[in-house]
Length: 365
Image 1 (spheres, helix red, strand yellow):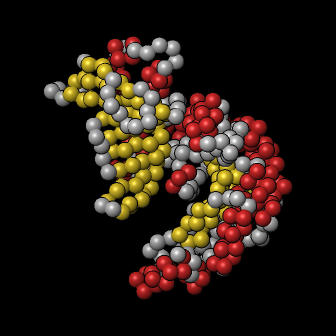
Image 2: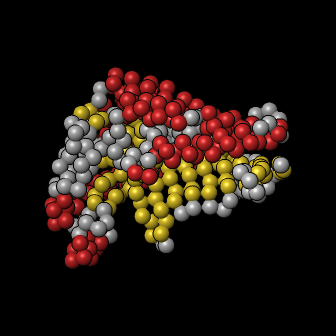
Image 3: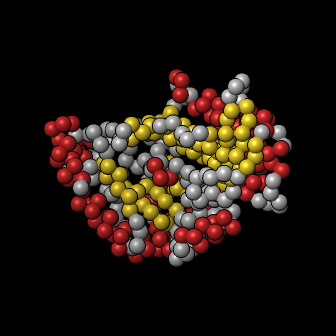
C-alpha cells in the first residue's frame, strides 16, 4: 500500500492517495480531498462522490451521470448526452431504485475504509483536513442500508414531499412555510393535486424548523441556502413574511450580502448553521406587491425569486391552463429588479409542438 499526496480537483485543501488491491489482481487508486465542509472521493477519471460532515452523500459523478441527493432523501440526476442534457428523476421503481443505488455507494466507501484500516489515516495533526475526511467517511461507512431506509422515512414525516426544486437549489435546506399550490389547475402539473393550499402559522413553522434542524444534525455545516416551500411561499402578506424570516434568522443566521465571495464563504464556515439567504418560488398572477415591500424582504435575507413563467406566449399559457398575462410577468420582474432582487425565470420546452415552437421561443426570449 502507498500513501502519498497527489494532484487533485482544484480548490481542495489536502489530498491523500490510497492504493490497495480490490478483489484479485486489481489495484484501485482512491483520491480524497476536502473543501467547504465536504469530502470528495475520486476513483479514476470518471467517478467521484462528495459527502458532508455527517456522512450524507451530496453529489455523485459516475461516468456520464451526475446525481444530487437532497435532504429529504431523493436522488435527482441527469445524464450528459453529447452537448445536451437529459434530466430525469431517479424514482423508487425498477433498476434505478434510489435506496439500492445509495446503499451501493455507502457500501463501496465501507469496503475501502475497511481495506485501508488505520495506516492511511496516521498523517496530519490536530483538526486537519485529513482528520475531517477520516471522520466524515467513517460516518459515511456507518450508514447501513437499514439506517438509510430509516432516514428516508424520517424525512418523509418532516417534509411529506418536496415535489420540485430549481436545479441550483438541490443542496438547499427546505423549510415549508406553506403547503400546496394556490392555483393547482395547470394542465401540465399534478405535483400538488392531493395537497390543499394552506399557509402555515408561525408556531407551525417554528416546530417544523426544530424538526428539520434535528434531522440535519452535523450536515448543517454544509447548509448555505434556505429554500422556502412549497409552490408559492411568497404569496402571503409582507408583514407575516418578515416575521417568519426573522424567526428563522434567529436559528439560521444570514450572511452579510456586502461581503466578498471569499469573506462570505469563511463566515459561513465559521457559523453553523448559517446561510447566504432565502430563495423561493412565486407566480405572477396574484396580487402585486409594492417595490418597497420587496426591498424589505431583500433586507430580511431574500436573495433570489424563481418565477414559473413556462412560456411568454399568452395563447400557449391559456392552453396550459395557466391564467397568466405575460405582460404582468414582465412587470413583476421589473419590480423585483427595482428592489435589488435577482430573478430566475423558468420556461418549459417541448410544450408547443413543431408548429408552435417558433412562436413559443420568440415570445419567451
